[in-house]
Length: 253
Image 1 (cartoon, one colour):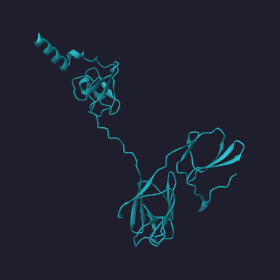
Image 2 (tube, one colour; image 1 turned 30 degrees about the vertical axis):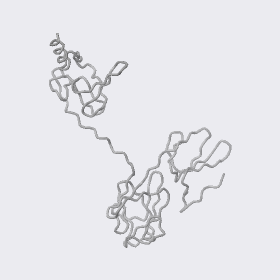
Image 3 (cartoon, rainbow, N blue to C red; image 1 turned 90 degrees about the horizontal axis):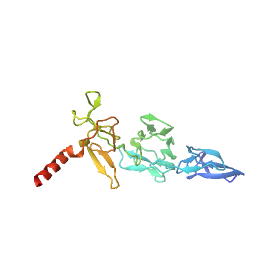
Image 4 (cartoon, rainbow, N blue to C red; image 1 turned 45 degrees about the vertical axis):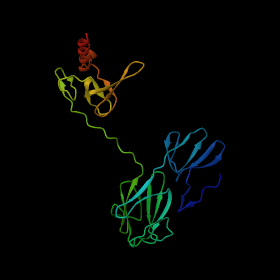
């Protein structure tokens, strides 16, 4: 087997997946500190595994962790690997506060988690108010070094899209679903996004050049589908626009 990467604190410190040939058609894949957590035949994994020839591996994306100062200015993006934190200028991450020890703690970042190790600091290392010597720090938790406090966050975490609430559902005689905006009219469409029920005047219809149409919700712009068993739609001539067009034609005669 080829020589393995140099270990730090008894752990592999490689920044990318390492592959070693065992023999013939077998390999070892080491990904303890991979910059992109890989998948082996569809399963995400860490550590060192034995791989048979023909298995597929795909690199995944790495989480980007950020320490946001609560009583300390700025945001600190944590690089993958080991980062030493303290007041001494030789630290990778220097915090110039008197309550922080010269070499306060070490932060270990992998593709999916953050671990904090206290280095014998005077004023202690705390996670959510509890003093720790070594512990995992999870997104949303607070890290306090002396009197300096940070919150761990994930950079670029997508926000849940806002979907407006649809009108409450009501029913007509015969248990027929009513339009959410017109309680006396039967609903003919249901929005696949906000789940609102609407009549044909409460939706937007997009006619395709080659024929057919697409119907969209006016509440959230989601795609609408016809409700099975709903009363038939009115002919276009009976709508307000249709009646107006017919009236104009009569006046022109």
